[in-house]
Each structure stands twice: as C-alpha cells, then as structure tokens.
Length: 247
Ligand SMILES: Nc1ncnc2c1ncn2[C@@H]1O[C@H](COP(=O)(O)OP(=O)(O)O)[C@@H](O)[C@H]1O
Ligand SMILES: [Mg+2]
Image (tube, rainbow, N blue to C red; front, side, top):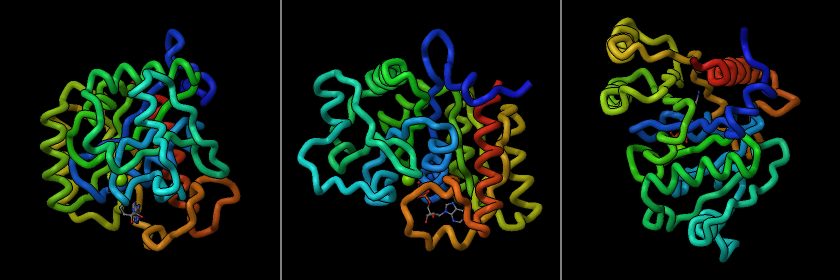
C-alpha cells in the first residue's frame, strides 16, 4: 500500500527522511527537480551547490545582500539553520559562493543533515553540485533515496554509468529527464546501466521547452498550475510518490 505524505514525513525513530538529488553531470536537472520535489514533499530544501545556477539563486535568494550565510554559521556554531520561509516555493537553507571551498568533510555533512531533520522535524531535500565533492558524498550517505536525473544522451549516460558503478550499494532512483522520444540506442544503453545493479527507475520527465525560459521563482507544482505545466507537474507528483514508496 502506498504511504501518505504524513506517514512518510514522520520517518523512522524520530528521523524524518532525507532525499538527495545528485548526478555526476551538470545540467541534467538536479536543481529543477530538487526545488519541485522539495515543494511537493513539503520538505526543506538544503542547497549544497554554490554556482550561480544553484537553486538558491533561481528561487530569488541573492547571497550578495547578506553578510551572514546560514550554512557557514550552521557548521561554525554546530547549530541547526532556520530555513527561509517560501511562499509557493520550498522553505530553503540557501548556499553561498565560498561554500565550494569551505564545505566540511562528508561525515560532518551526514551528521548535520540528520540532526537538522530531527530538530526541524521535517524531511529534507538536498540539492548538490555536479559530481562528487564532500557535501555531495555526505548528503548521499544521509539519504533514504538518492534521485539521479539523467538525460538520455551519450555524455549524460556515460556520467550515469560512472556514478552507478561507484555507488552500487546506495538507494538510487534513476530519473530520465528532458525526454523527447529517446531512440532505441539510448533506451538500450540506459537499461544496460541500471539493470545489472537492479536500480529502480523513476518516472520519465519530458523535455518542456517553456521550462528552459521560465523566470518565475515559485515552484511549478504550486497551485494554481498553468495549463502548459500539467504534464511536468504530473511527473513530479509521480516522482514524489516513487520517493515516498522507495523500498
Ligand atoms: N524537463 C525539462 N525540460 C526542459 N528543460 C529542463 C528540464 N529540466 C531541466 N531543464 C532546464 O535545464 C537547465 C539545467 O537544469 P538544472 O536543474 O539547473 O540542472 P543541474 O542542477 O543538474 O545543473 C535549466 O535551464 C532547466 O530549466
Ligand atoms: Mg544545479
């Protein structure tokens, strides 16, 4: 039987679930999916990316305006950050540019995420920098589910293969993104990557040209949903269901 959001959010032994969105290749949709999934799951989005294309910036957070950075303070003082409240977008623990150099090692990240989820009493969705860095490995270690978006083109599939071979025993959920009539070659290649490891697949997310041009910083899945966004919103809902029911 499938879980309700309330049942899922309660987690186990007082630890609400942590979901990490990661991929070894940039541009495959980590941040897009992390923002929408966090909103759909009523989770706090923890942004561990530091590039200008990161979720914090797309959500309208401008680090230049602030002298204090919640992630820096959280690790310097060992405190749980207070998420910024989002209206029609997920509550956010934003990143900042120096995080790339300042991030602590993976074990500290894992411990911190678990502590924050417990103390906030909320599920967390972590968005990550492309590839494996300390914060990414730490967030993968903390995760109940690791959502791995992959575009069905050669370079992305090569990166996916490398990631899957490295992280065989982690709870990966491979989610094809920007799908537009994949050729037989791409489907065979994808199957050849996930099947040997019996990695489950999330729903296909279609390529949505309007999404590439979108400048609004509210979640696409927040009501009311624009007509052109219906298909995308349905696939994010399906992804949220797949995350909640991940065995
Ligand atoms: N399903 C999709 N259809 C069309 N464009 C998409 C889709 N998913 C993501 N994008 C676009 O692709 C670009 C990269 O996405 P992003 O989420 O920032 O990737 P990442 O965080 O992995 O680098 C963005 O311009 C985003 O709007
Ligand atoms: Mg990103």
